[in-house]
Picture 1 (cartoon, one colour):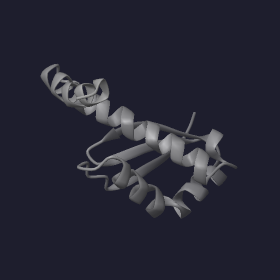
Picture 2 (tube, rainbow, N blue to C red; picture 1 turned 90 degrees about the horizontal axis):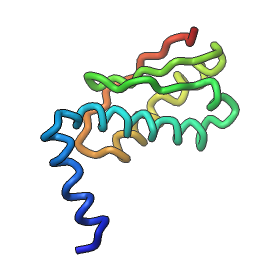
Picture 3 (cartoon, helix red, strand yellow; picture 1 turned 90 degrees about the vertical axis):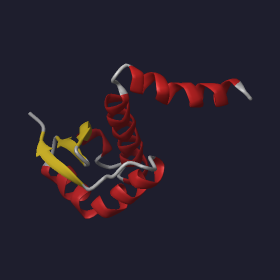
Picture 4 (cartoon, rainbow, N blue to C red; picture 1 turned 180 degrees about the horizontal axis):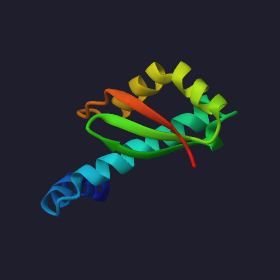
Length: 100
């Protein structure tokens, strides 16, 4: 067993024991979404910020209406990519709001 295998086995148990599993899942999904924006929506990626994942919904703040529109057009692809990258997590939708 390699160090990474050991870490992969221990981390979820430790997070669950300390009540941090949900926060870690939210952070992972937000991180994966940010990477997806950079890869698939480079023109507006800097205007999009994933803030939290809760109850199956990813909340995204947009600095411009163009960024929000682009994200809406690609919502299905983003959700599919997130579902694939974080198996076992039910991702049902986006909540897009204007950044202040």
